[in-house]
Image (tube, rainbow, N blue to C red; front, top):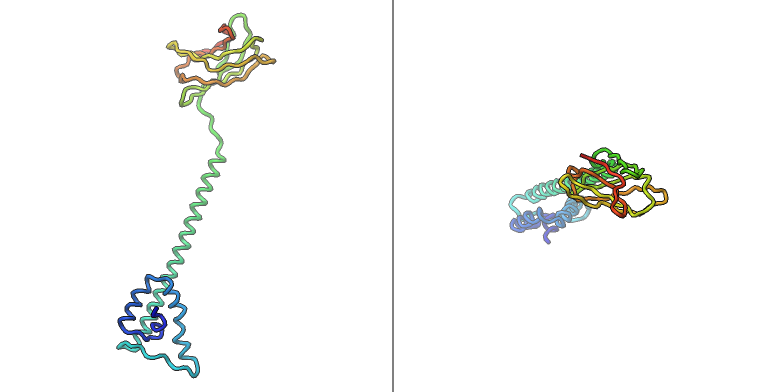
Length: 215
């Protein structure tokens, strides 16, 4: 645009004011102005070169003063912009470090066991030698029922049944006979832990093999 004449002081007052108002909002022109700022001084020092024409303003030194002032403002704005950029990068880096630390903490945090009662020991029904224990864990949907059993009769399948004090009962799991006559089984019931009164092991015909009472 008019930057060459502006640097050399050859603009009218109206054009100079136009450039003054345009420069603060234009990065390209400010950079070009910064690069062109040394030209008047070089021309004055170059041997045999004509001095640039005087500025067409009432005060001969006004253009130079205005240029120096504007260059100072440009340099300050550029320094502030770079400082803001560094601060933004530092803030971003700190946020990334914090997120990484939280993620690592979650990964390294040991899983907490869900609350549940102590294992409850089974008592064998008359004529059987079944032994074992039941561990019940409350869940949002009901109760997880885990049993460890030994000395099961050779015939299967077997069934795990939970019953509430109000008479409700549900089948929590079924499994087949094993060569070792033992089993570790995890089942589920929609009954909540506080409602379950007994956990029973039954054979295929529904005969009671062992039971444990919770409450």
